[in-house]
Amino acid sequence: MKGPFTSLPPTAGFGLRHPHVLDIIDRPPAIDWVEVHTENYMVAGGPRLRQLDAIRESFALSFHGVGLSLGSVDEPDRAHLKRIRDLVRRYRPAALSDHIAWVRAPAAMDGNPSGGPSLNDLLPLPCTEEAVNILARNIAIFQDATGCQVMVENPSMYAAFAGAELDHAAFVAETVSRAGCGLLLDVNNIHVSAHNLGFDAAGYLAEMPFDAVGEIHLAGHAEREDAAGTLLIDDHGSRVRDAVWDLYDQAIGVTGPVPTLVEWDTEIPALDVLLAEVATAQARLDALPGAPQVAS
Image 1 (tube, rainbow, N blue to C red):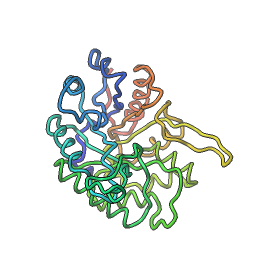
Image 2: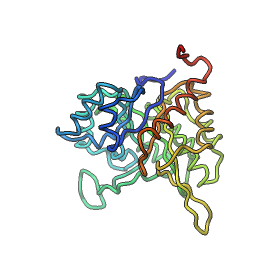
Image 3: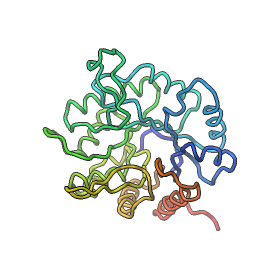
Image 4: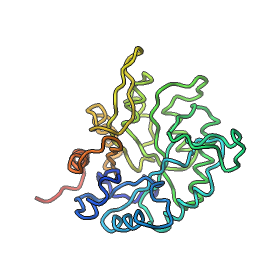
């Protein structure tokens, strides 16, 4: 059974970025929900919140954070948490999430009790018991502050840490279990990490806690060639690749229909291109045994 960490409909949506905001307000596409980056709306008022008010009239909302730094040794910044809580109280999103990653340098580095500087990237963590404990503590603080059961997203990886105590799939699963939260399953991140670190993507996927999956992310990735070979970069700048669609089919074959998001954050295309990717995901959901059939 899925937990209460999402009330999104089990259909396909997309990550809403600025170039498409006015388009979907003026001509709402036939989808049920969109996801926005929480930090883009942590303001007191103004046009961004007015736009979000209008978007909420047509779509369910998923708030996806990128700045809480749940993997930092310091506890989450209280001012940041308050801004998230204020947004949650105003908009009552159907889902709330952030990342298994760290973003903020430790407070000890510059003596700032609210934490060190933001590094503006989602940085991976060593797969250790200490890291799991830190994540579980910080996710609990996140949930207590917002009054929501949240989801956390598995990261993309580019290098392995020395001294790992858990394999990466077990690290993600143990974090979700110990924190009592949901999993935002990013299958593109699994494919990227598997290629870069040399493990089997299907095997990793099989270790995920499927009963905790409340949302799935799909995205494109880039390839970078150097003397060491090909490195995959999770840049969200192209169509979803065939290998990622295959992983997605494996995932939903276990979970059944689950809210599915197409992310496209760089080289953002025309809205109809993005909606075509959403339609591909929706067709896969509709083809699942027992999926609701639309009358012709």
